[in-house]
Image (cartoon, rainbow, N blue to C red; front, top):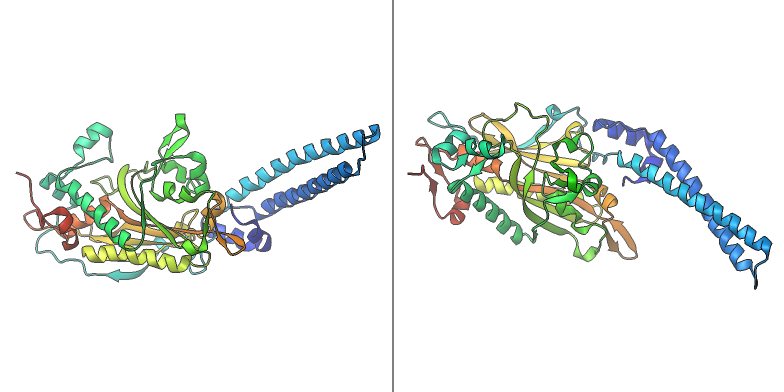
Length: 418
């Protein structure tokens, strides 16, 4: 839950910060509810103390007057406790609508048009022929089939076949091997989580629930990104400072409804309802998330540098930041058929926002503090596959496999099936 102390100390600042993320909150309403709760809490504590004094003051068999007095205090206490629970619930509901604050270095901007390119790496290849897009290449090689997938599952689904599936497997194993060497712990998490958990993570605010596949009968959501089930691994846990940072990776299928994307990226496998993903999650002590954020970004960059894919890094502005993120970077890979860079990964710090809502702490001496949480994409599989197919295509329609993946593929090229 959002730290109410911050709101008490800087209500105008918090309200303005929320506005920069396109979230409207009424700080005065929240503080009024908080004042009522704290006053009721004081009254409840007074009644408990009165009850304790009354009980201790009874010697031997209580008199009728003492019994009547005890009953009166007990009834008042029971009513006060019910009111206290209701007031606390009201404060929690209001606080649940307060987004995580942007980091001071995050640019204030209205939407994705104001995101900034902070780094560009590699030069786009100059082809001696007109490059084909990934779908034409994939269909020509017999490794991508969206037509049959549409008959089976509908639009925005695909089959990866033969070398297409092997390429995905190679990317997965390359990412896992790299991250294992960095000390990450591999986890195979659920892909279904409770609605309450998704809400506490902050993924159902600002209309984001529209993009989640729901199993209404079971009150469950399908994960739209792997960290949604990986972060709660330490819900209600207390780690030890000496064991931090704690870094995990997972490989799961992910599911998105792609609400609001009608008519956008309908060709091929760029924007689909189901995809597989290697995700990174870090738990660090407070004050260490900035350093860890740069580390996760460096890993994402390493992947695309070693793949030999030109890319750029974007710093995301407040208006495009999302409800739970305090800072976010995107990596965009160059896609020759579109002659532009497209998003392939992202990494975010959510500071202590999710750990407060999920009660995730660490022991630092005599203190129990909230963990800082970060996430980052290693590979969201379809998109690096698109980048590889398009950047490594040859005039005859074959694909040169990036050198770093060849040991996993067992070959140097992908050629049309006979």
